[in-house]
Structure formats: structure tokens, C-alpha cells
Length: 116
Image (cartoon, rainbow, N blue to C red; front, side, top):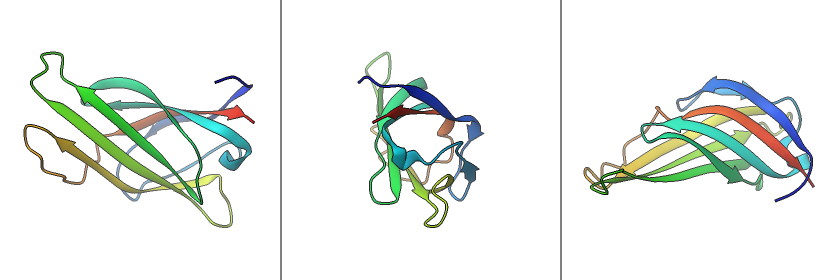
């Protein structure tokens, strides 16, 4: 992936219903690099804005290999101001519990836009 990068967000947001503001319209960028933190540590994931939202999805395999976690979080863009983001769905599935419960501990720390 190449292109000019611009920080769109730096902070710490988590939990369904939480809102935050980006420094620029994310639809102007070909990709978003999202730094996240969750029970498996810190990771960077790549996403694209598709029809009013972008998706954060991450997989973590425990160091011992005895368990794994799949996390997914939807970030919806406000229809009149796409710099306004709301976390509308955040779930995880753990192989040792298979709960599928709402997961509010996934934290978004930074979002970088990669220019088209």
C-alpha cells in the first residue's frame, strides 16, 4: 500500500454508541490504517470506507495456541458529516467460550488515511 498518509484521529474510544470526530472526510482515502488495542494486545488493521461505514476486524491467536478471538466493530459515518463517526456494533467470539456477546473493550487509538 502506498500513498501519502494523514492522521485522521488520535485518542482512545471504545464501546457501542460512542462517537468521535475525524480530522478529514474518510471517503477521500483509499484505505484507513486503524491502530487498536484489545485483550490480545495492540494491532494495526486496514479498512476501507464502504457505503457509509468502515469495518474493523481482527483475529488473535493466543500465544499458547489454546484459544483464539475474532473481533468485529462497525464504524458508521454520519450521513451529513462523514467526519462524525459512531461505533454501532462491536462483537467478539472466543473459541473457548463462543459467546458472541457485545464487546466494548476494543479500543480505537489512531486512524490514518492513505491518499488515493
